[in-house]
Image 1: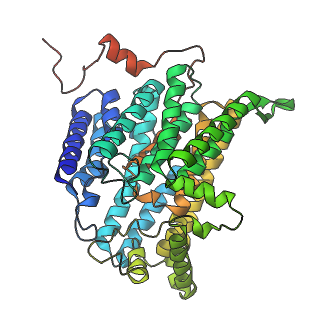
Image 2: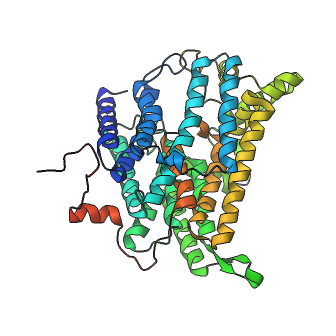
Image 3: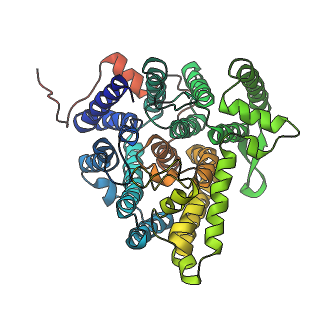
Length: 461
């Protein structure tokens, strides 16, 4: 990694970390979200045998700091729903399964990721309820993240973009894109309007295309389709999805223009490769970039599962033990010291079955089903509203679990984006359609009303 890029990344991370500690809660959360895009040590150390200092602070230190700053009131007001109980059970089983995995340090990290998800969920729920987070601040976050990506990609040499030089912040492109589509889902179903709001949504869409994440691009298309429908009251108080023709025309027009620009000016973009594979009669899914490589991993996982005894299949081979499979599957690419055991199988569903057995895959599926059912009930009860943001984010969540390593991205960009969308859907309030302002974040900056009371910052002259 170029020394200049690493230095800038570290300076930015510690600036954001200081903001989490010192600024009012509203801006503390703003800094934390930006810090989640600063994935530094994954590029500079051996994951299997070491613990990166900055990543430890980001994954464990900053969430606990936010929890401390709320005075643990996030825990006091917690309503223990079924999904939360299932998630705690998954954490417990992952911790127990770490004893027979053969990768103890990686197993500890995995348990820490799962705990971080739980803690951050509580914090973000409180943040939306207290209005520390709102749509105005989220728009500011969106543009700030895009600015970070522009700095990393076009100024610092695009180290995080990999060999393909993809557009991304200081994090993996797929996590960067996952954050963007989750943020887009919130904005689309926030009820807000105005040119700045639409410009922000357009900026997010453009950044997703430039990131080259195919599964996030597909998720964005599904999100756009969902956005073309609206809930309307039917007979006997029922709700029905009805198409909005104006939104459909606009969406189709933007899609056609976007694909045309993509083919003309970005012929080597990963998404262009996906569009080509779909449009060509003789193309298959194996022609799409790394998909054939992933299929090879999945086939190897299923082959190993088929050879297991009953107890091995039931209990799994242990938390993070997928690393052992990948060391044999692709020895030219992985070694025992450098392998990131929690980010190698590229399917959380298969990973749960392989490492945690029947209890693990059962708990993970139960969590997804129970969470989805809860939001479906909320959508029906409220006639739509912010809860629709979960419906918009659900495709990226399911696809991310199916073909990515989302369980290990708790305090990373992708995981934080998912949590922002889920907690807005659960605790957020719909913006008044008549409000055309940029939101509270912009107003506080422009009016100079930057409240620092109740923080470590001086308030006197």
